[in-house]
Length: 132
Image 1 (spheres, rainbow, N blue to C red):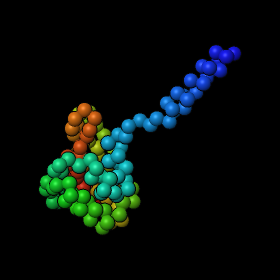
Image 2: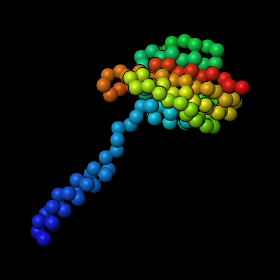
Image 3: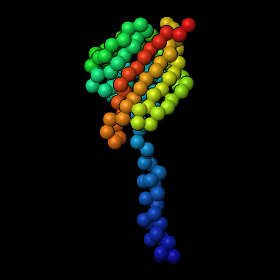
Image 4: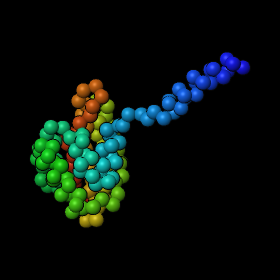
């Protein structure tokens, strides 16, 4: 009986600790969540030093700060109603394709994440293309 009590004294805290441990956040999932929320600040956490942004018919490379301002402006003028991920793929380089519905139109969103180190992904490119 003492053995079981002693054993449970050590196992129970370990089990509770293991149960509360959350897996590391997946950058891909975080980018999708930020797009669903129209949150440029959260997106910017994953920007590479320079990021290629295609917004409708304009495409250019921007610094993190510039890209954040551009996307904040876009999301303020086009509040996101919904974002549906249609396709995802890749391993070392991951990409996603989705459909974003905003107050002012529907967009096809394509984004590319590149592995930058063993446990880090950076957002290299994001495209917003109007759908009719």
